[in-house]
Amino acid sequence: MESTFIRVKGIIKKGDKYLLIKRWVDDRIPDPFVWEFIDAEVKHGEAPDDTMRRAIRELLSVEGTIDRIVYTWSNMLGDTHCVGIAYLCSIKEEDEDNIVLPEDYGEWIWVSRDEFSYYIENQYVLKDLEGKEL
Image 1: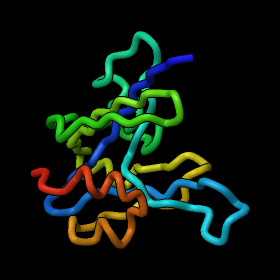
Image 2: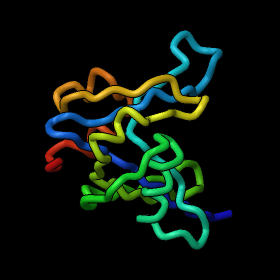
Image 3: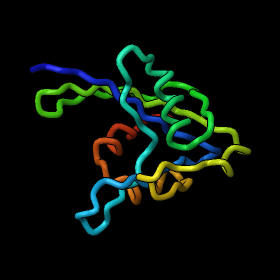
């Protein structure tokens, strides 16, 4: 059966730093957390921009602003087609102290672009970011 879903990714920027969150993936492995950008699946009938703002609100407990689309992607996961939109976003500096992550997220940090490969293990994300202006 063919199916398609849409994901959004929020690359939150502050000055020359970018917000990464540490998400729990599996407690059966030595390091059960992975660093990533904010992301979410678009719900049926929901606009991708609304999904991005919802994801920031749900994952960080603060409001976010979409600045622009950075890139799109498409890949196959078995016979399921995943289409994605990566946004450059921001949050108000005064809201940073109000960030509260859901239970399945460990922590959050600001990193420079040069540090992406140190934290982000997903090589597809790193490849997608090559040559993109953030």
